[in-house]
Image (cartoon, rainbow, N blue to C red; front, side, top):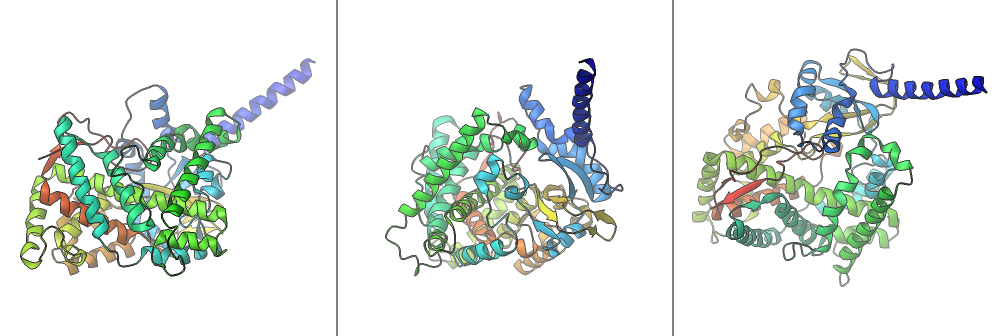
Length: 499
């Protein structure tokens, strides 16, 4: 009996030691030349939440734990998502990964944590897929995204945004920016991209907006992001999360379908909503593929423009001189256009300062500051010097890469739109060069560059143009400054005053 108990105890101890060794140390096959970030780094937001401490900005955590080793080595070993990964920031490494799509293959949550709630939510989609499925999805998405947009829908929503800002200012003297920008971005996504109104500008509690507010904390619960193995357990809270994910997807697909009841999906080939529905109805997509790609369009189509606008409003609030310079630039359109209210999109696209300001916002605060969704398909030698074994997840930190001093200069931490150039030709040349060199990755890069960047830039230009013509704004004095503790990078609970 005692011998059996002793053997059992030793087995338990062995399991615990093995787990702790896995948790504390990277696999022995990982490159020894790279520094190891303490395993608890990604657990700090969870610890703060558990202890009910004020959240620590992810920028602060980056500066304390990641900045020095990444600047020194260009890559580190990082524990994230229940596994050890290689995180890179050196632009030449980034460019190499983007160039070698076959070696550093996309491998999203559907591969990484197929049992997880997050994988059930996003599934196999255009962003996370690889190979045949990616080509299939791209054939449907690309014509619906990379097209000439009619900006009238965005202009109409921008006018509604102006009225909502005025109402909030009248009511309490400041604007809660983040939820308002989510409603606005959802309206543009639904009406301009998907062709089916969600009603978010008319109703603060519109179903899909309300659903999204409920689902985010469950999907991005730090406990399950850091320990996805827990999703194997039949926990009541996770069962509820799975039901919520299913109900949300049902509501999204049904809403888009209702908006296209009178459409001929074979003829209306430019509308993304039409294209997704036609792909399913023609047998090109399965129902599961339709649902997952609809979610992908929903998330990327509203979150990236939303976070761009939040960061732009925040930075311009801190830089009134650039606000005023933008107004001066916009005023030059008045004498060259019949409508000072709605200059053409081509006219807005021709404005150098507006263009460089948007690029500079995206450089400093990329909406997805860190992304680990590529997996080596064979042994790799990154940069000719870092051996990476097969099956290793490789990701990048865009916040760090976009601030690389070798490319952007010693003032890379500063908000300075003029660094992109003076003329539009200079600015666009800098944009192309930074992309090619892997020094500006807010839209990612290579063959997997963001297909929706044209739409995001349209929304950014039109929205800022409208707000700048009506308001000036600053930070509400009572706002507690800070960026989000984890996940998408933006000013947390941003409060602004508009005059």
